[in-house]
Image 1: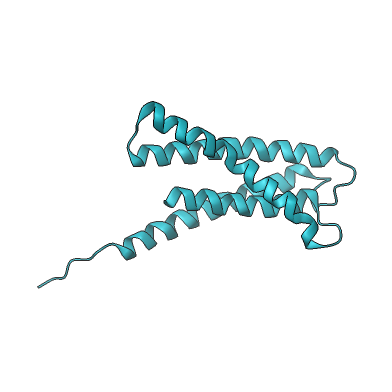
Image 2 (image 1 turned 90 degrees about the vertical axis):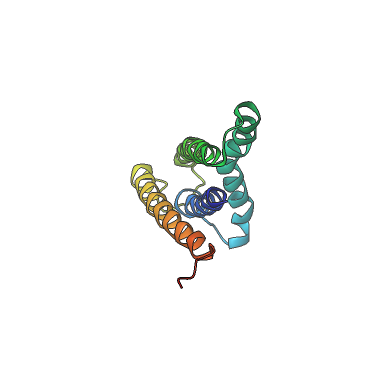
Length: 138
């Protein structure tokens, strides 16, 4: 469950960042909604397809399945992000903040997602530990 939450939150954050930094929002925020939904789906699609196939083929335990899902997401989301950055760097109609300087925008997104990943991992680990049953000392 922790991995699903991390993948979902990180995909949404990456989608919002991609929409603002590379695509741009021209007139109204509602115009960006279809693009944001497309970004989120594109970021999560690789993990959504590969994880059930891996589970059926290998039958791993829960921890191995979570590691596999997160690694697949990390690789496929990175490839999708690079593809979208190249696309919007070549799109003359894109009005994002980093459309003209894709490298700086990509580095900022990588740092943002990495820091957020570790914060989420720590928070979720602490949150799960908080809800575990505790033994009372006599």
